[in-house]
Length: 87
Image (cartoon, rainbow, N blue to C red; front, side, top):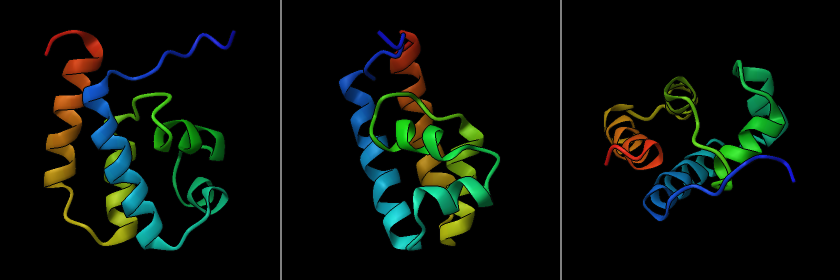
């Protein structure tokens, strides 16, 4: 057992949005790992809903995609609340 837990259902939307954004960049997971402070395996976990990404990872992906970060960071806030049990 890896110790990772599945994200709450509310967080699925964030993972889906991040996958779409990653696909728009045309970058592979390895390329994301090279261009951000987060590893290829971390990106795999974030994009597949295995782990909530850090807020900074969401911002980094938005920058790479040329996407204004406001909407996705607001979605991250909701996902983080659900993940932490505060939502």
